[in-house]
Image 1 (cartoon, one colour):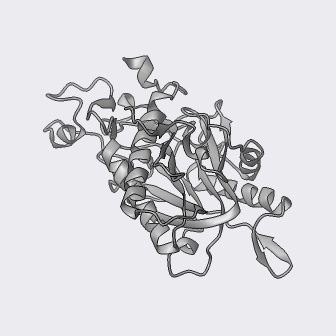
Image 2: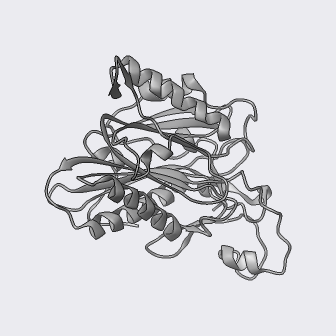
Image 3: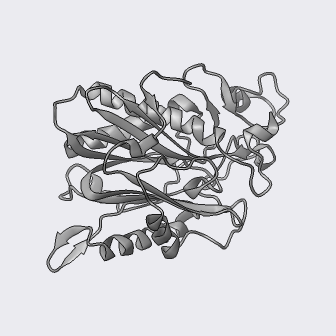
Length: 328
């Protein structure tokens, strides 16, 4: 999975984008913040049957708000949405937010994944966790693997919990030339298996499955062998794509939709009724020249696919769930 214009400074390659993690390895949970402190155009695309989100309505094209100051990706299921309050507190304290009458209101959409099946069921990212993630935020290449929102993530769950492997968080960026940049950050907690989008080879699939083709999740689904019924709230891949292109609000929402194309390239099956897949998009607008939109959308999909693979490649075993490096 190599690309001549690939750059693993990741999403922070884009000026004005910072990333910070809060990691609780002991309880197998955490959260990640993507800060865009100057206020940038934002969009979102929510898919799957079990999403958990905050402030996504503001990002729809017909809504008034054109500023996003941060995005939160969190573990902890719906409880983890509390971490967005800590991000809002941090940004307000630093004078960052939408200027209302006598007050600045930070706009901080958020999405969560379910990681309560491993580690602690009662310890989740809270307001303090979100604040600490902001304190850790920088424009350095983000740490990947079992950190932040990817701390308690798992993948390849079609055959049940006894066969899962460790998920995580990954990032990837592309330089399209002429100063145009696109990047992605993805927390991978999918029901499906993870594949290399370039080669089609399996990267992370269910462990120890004895069927004709254990590498094929669709084959697993169509096998006559009974499968455990998936829990509809124990999955979800969430992430952010960002570019320095100047996009309007409708187009940045389209960018978020293209991110899901990258998920479908790397996770099989994706967007099931048992996943709450959600992608946010940010456009800083610092790249002034008119861009070929198809190039930006294609790059976003590829960045998401590559970041998804990196998430499981960089993950470490945690709470009894092995990483792919530990089972090969």
